[in-house]
Length: 361
Image (cartoon, rainbow, N blue to C red; front, side, top):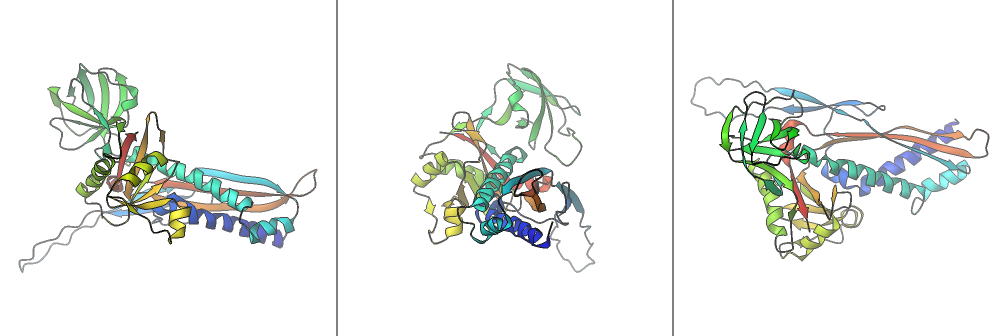
């Protein structure tokens, strides 16, 4: 491939990425705080997190230096999407790059935005147990076996759809997570951790205990209730001491309409074009920047998994790792071929910086 064709291919890839960053919700609600560089189809990037410091009381005697533990999680760029399309000649390809409005670049950036937004907003399953708003399942009573986490129910009708939901029985001091479903009277729970080997450390709970499987089904919301529901999500973050700045909430159009009707809603300033028009920012509500986006997981019948959080929660990486123009074998003209890779990671320490509202109209 000639140097000129290589330059055009790189310019095209750069313009697509640039347009993506201008308009994607994913870019606004994630961070890029990783070490390393996206180089190929399986880049492994490091995310460093540190243990909490304590503020010591000084009495005049020697202080004891704390050991600031450092943990290293890995983000894998395991999502791969490719472009491959014909171009008549290099001059036509150059015209796409020089005047991208309404051309193939705009289409490519829009598709990338929708695909990546859907991927990032689909991470609602990584929300910390206990940070979910919905209709809980509490029917019957349970016993929990030590070590194994086997939950034996009495008068229960457990379902496979409960896997991944938060679980807390009377006697528990923290939330756990449903690991597996065995029958309508038997499930297994585990510690709410993704970065460690699965285990249950909550101890035995004797038979007859009441319990809560959080947000098992969608909770109906209305214009009169939406403020209270969003404030509940804010309360989850407040209780976990998540910073109040840089908080965001992403909702589908139906719930966006309810928020706009609420007296507490603060509309976005129309002059902020990139955020208001391109990214779907509708304004402020309950301390969140609210974005309207139809890539939210779920539907109006079964409920949407509305995601809220802080920018520190999700670490995201994106790169265009291959880009070139090639001659079409056995045909006239040329073709552009490009490969984008991306991935996201929510380390255990940051899962508390997310909250989910399982809501329906």
